Amino acid sequence: MTQANLSSIEAFASRAEGELIDALVEQGWYVGKGVIDAGLCASLERELYGLKEAQALEEAGIGRGREHHLRKDIRGDAIHWLNRESEAQRAYLSAMQRLQVALNQTLFLGLFEYEAHFAHYPTGAFYKRHLDSFRGRANRVVSTVGYLTPEWPVDGGGEMVIFDPNNPEREVARVVPEAGTFACFLSDTIPHEVLPTRHPRSSIAGWFRRNASLGGVLDPAR
Image 1 (cartoon, rainbow, N blue to C red):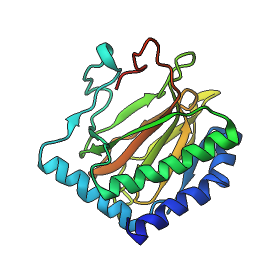
Image 2: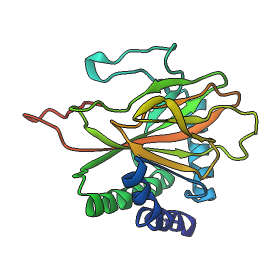
Image 3: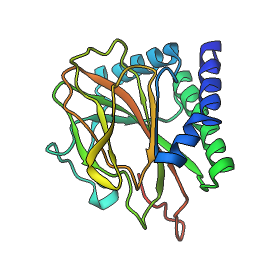
């Protein structure tokens, strides 16, 4: 693993031990700039665009399993699940593993797995306000977003808007999707949306999950 990738992992670990966990406890969400190493961001974005050129991205839907269906009126991104097939993926996932350990040791969340996918938003795409999990069915416990697009234009749109969980009409943060920025939040608590983008937008969306499997059936299925 390259020195740049190792530095990125250490940066994640440093943030996880301090401000990231404090922010999750105090407000349910965290946003940090420059958390992901620039070289790693570039490698991951190149890989995403390689997948796009190879037509290996699939249109994202809503719901899971039998309830999964496409809704272009709700979201318009295309995705590819991470599978550790490249050094860049392995570096990113190793950083998430370090974060998972820190979250479990500090907050006793019982996280057992992390899943993530590349997300490409073409010009005009958006994702309407939603929660990543539902209370009582909270398999997804902590959501993450790592942004990959360098030199995001001022008028590019595509921000992730985070809303107050006690007043879902009140905006509390707006995250510019520029390379190196990393966000995480409680999956069943924090409403959020992606505003229409005026510039192609690349990121990695991920979720730390608890094990809610029953009778050998993974819950929820991907």
